[in-house]
Image 1 (tube, helix red, strand yellow):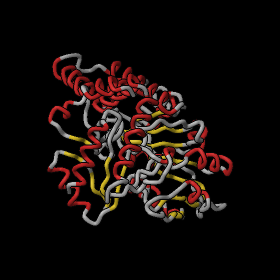
Image 2 (image 1 turned 45 degrees about the vertical axis):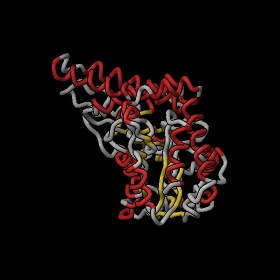
Image 3 (image 1 turned 90 degrees about the horizontal axis):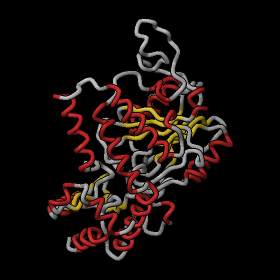
Image 4 (image 1 turned 120 degrees about the horizontal axis):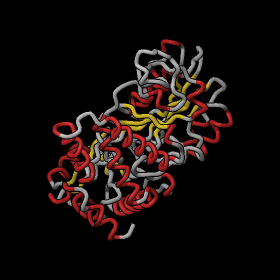
Length: 378
């Protein structure tokens, strides 16, 4: 992105006026002024304006789904809103028609949201094959080599939450398609920083919270589900909005919607929808592809600068195709480093003995230089 575009974006983040360097988008993204304005508008409507404006909520929900479709190369009818990544993955885990002895492949470095919904299936005879990581990384090849004739599902992170490693989804998706295996994605550490083509990568299912790289609210998420997968699932949880003629309130015609909207059983998260709508429109304005290139440029630059210090990044020698927005290094004193940087107004994260830095597209090379300089002074 050009410097003037980055400067334009930076004006949308009020916290920057306080001199804070925020490299923690892999945990919680800050609210932009666009989001703040959107929420203020909603608060006004709910307190002294048109309090019951359901049509406007639906308009923003539909517009947001169109933008998600643009980001993922799919259509709006394949998107549904949910409350968090775990709840989305439970829709899948409880919807598949399992048989005793079916197997699931997971990496041993997955965030628990992408593990426990599937471990919960053990009581019905579903087994999990955990693929052991090497230096905190599990590749597409590692997962493919673990496939057996009983493998029914592979669920993997788009970007690994500790190392920042981006898996080769096209390779994995092609193999899953050839072998009739469902491919599910926890995309929370990728979307908002990266684009994703669900058609090209043969993705069957995505669950993604919006509070990290997408700069939305906690308690707001979405799923993508392919039409083919939806047609094979049972719908384990339904509500009054799951059916075709939802507003025929006393007809009770139990005909489930053919779109992904059947997974939205009741009242939608109004504040979450207003928020993600504002964020997605901002991303679209700057360009999803432009944002990805800037995130990758920042990651590459940060890795290069850290490589010349004692804080060796985990992805030091990896190619651009395996990078995303997270740059991490392992240290026994990770918590102390985190606290030291916090005192310098630099916000990072410490997880499992790893210091994790996660700058977004509007962060600058000068900020990266500042962070690296403070690390050298540690």
